[in-house]
Image 1 (spheres, rainbow, N blue to C red):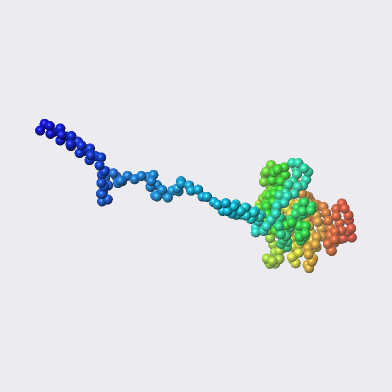
Image 2 (tube, helix red, strand yellow; image 1 turned 90 degrees about the vertical axis):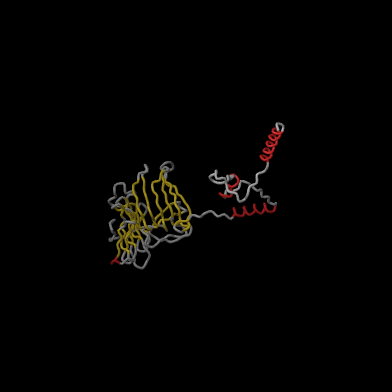
Length: 320
């Protein structure tokens, strides 16, 4: 018996060791270990792609044949050649950029940056002033007459006037008329005036008509902040221009034109008077007569050049 006990002990130890090394069989019907809160543990590194749809980091090399590579390059070159630059457009009209320089060179030189219609259009008949650029004279003009398509570039788009690298005036043109907001500044960038326009007429203008007929315009008196500011125009009962001029800071400035007012002909100038250059300087009480035209539209007088006037007794003064 004493010899059998060690043998039984040794046999038991061997059987236990064999059982520990054998594979454990798991039934598909077995339940998870209740000691694990979330059931059987999962490997997040192998399941992340399936649960989050994350993009694969694996790359596949695409091999192109020589013919495919050449075709791709040709397609790219064709697309680049066919790429068109975005054209400048303002209020639905195609425009081109221009600039002018005037005055002495240096810090006091004036520079104007503007845009004009690529295709000519005549401004409206009721425009108080028509603005255009003359490429030959390299200068911006304004007139009340019809524009010449051969020489006039109708202003249309943003406008900026600078002196010494500083903006002193900015605004917009639309079909040859002032439009939207216009501002003037001094050399220290202090705002001097601000005016809003609608196709040439000040937004706050006082507009009157003949016999309350909205089609028979009589007078447009421009106002801004309670004082005269902007383009002035008056018409005869037959729709012809009578007076055209400009106010600044409550004063008449620049050229003021009086028309003959013929009923069945185009507007013909009669007198052109000159007021002060700026409304921020003392007002000119008596303007100078610059030009005079006869009934046929022929100039008969120009200041400091010639005087071919006949005896005229009905010459009006500077007041309308």
